[in-house]
Length: 172
Image (tube, rainbow, N blue to C red):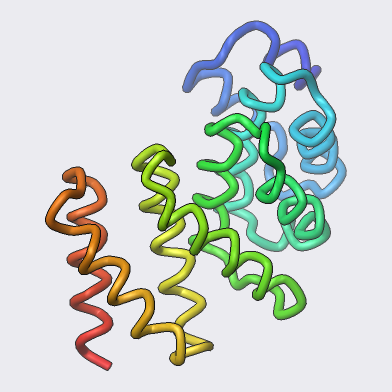
């Protein structure tokens, strides 16, 4: 299967499913997709982010060799919102390797606090910060304060996730 050809033919749920099914748990096929995600044209990178996120969700170990690249992409200023959104979506279901926790946490806090970021990016960033707060409880007061400050003016998506996370924070 030619992943690039499918990505260039357009973005659709059907194309994404084809790619994810083709990759399965195969590290070499995942590498092929990740290289398109990392090095492709703007459009290919954007389109590759969706199947990449789903494949990483199904097979989390496939993502481990790529954390350095993921962190670099999160920090880039000119990365498409779909790329940031899908990276954060992947990270919300991952155990971030300890060596990258600080950088991921900083990036997630930055996205969470940036009102110019799209809702989904802020929601996924909120979840990533909360997940890391399980290992670093000292960040919980700051997370709680940020969420409480956002809620009165937040969209439905941010309000929903924010309330869930505040509820989980209050149980601790």
